[in-house]
Image (cartoon, rainbow, N blue to C red; front, side, top):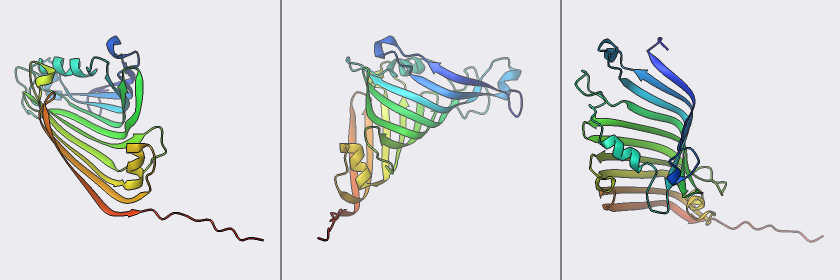
Length: 238
């Protein structure tokens, strides 16, 4: 497209999986929009300012050896020189694009087995605030496919990752916030059944360290907790 802004549109994008992690694609997306930086066209050095995935499905896979399918991607990205996403003037290295996804579904797999835990209706963003640092934002709705849990609140994750020679040594700062989750629906997510408690649940957690060795701190808050009253059916003898 030339108007309203120069960009490419790709339909039905499929990114194949590394055979070491399975045969199901890593990413499927109905539509991907890649917007060009106008200033880069005059320099004959094409840069993308924004890459947007619309309604994608992402598989996070951990194989029997304990490796994740995104490990190699993170290591490869850490070795590429890139300028910060928000840098206004072009430089000797290309500026990292703002990568986002809307309406995404994130699945988790152990080998070939897809776990029932997923994130649905997920908003995702990735950008480079500094030359050696990535920032990730993820907001989604936790679901469990083997239950009928519906109102499960909102899960928000913010993370900062720095460069490192090995994936295990990548410095990490992470915050997680699970909010507005009714206790009954939260128990369906955790235990696959309604445990009969009512009220609301909020979880806040932070992690600091490296991907292989991080200190985790978590806070659990329960509000208006009560036991659901059993329902009795009274039958009148005729």
